[in-house]
Image (cartoon, rainbow, N blue to C red; front, side, top):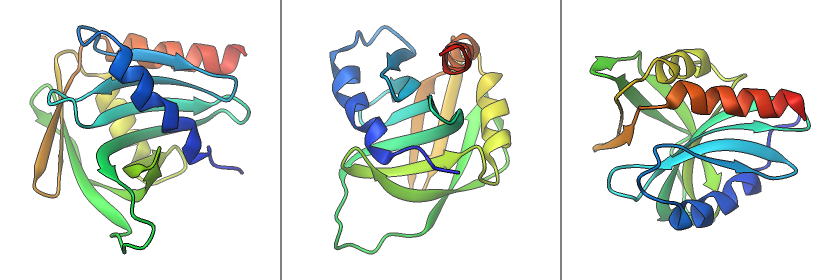
Length: 158
């Protein structure tokens, strides 16, 4: 099974920066993928749920604003604890990878922990926090279920 190309998420940052900050989730659709994305409260990190249109493979990702250094040695995974509307989910080890030229964390539906995070985020109605390393990211949890449903519908309708 082919994993979605990391370059699929490259245009996300540019599109998000041009989107209205009032929108919790922004939908991005190309010939290769569809995604629901949003910037964190500090407008530094991007949370996304996407689907590779050719293979129907789903991905949850966090893209940082920090450039990827091909010469650097990164941890293989980072433990992330998502807190949805005040309820912490089980910690999940998410692989570190290059996303759009930046350091990112990418969890595919075939990775352990995907269902825990997906189901938790899907239930969000107000706030999503992601705690990793010494940072807590805050995202708007409103409209998460409709945003994820739209990704699913478009992915399987095409």
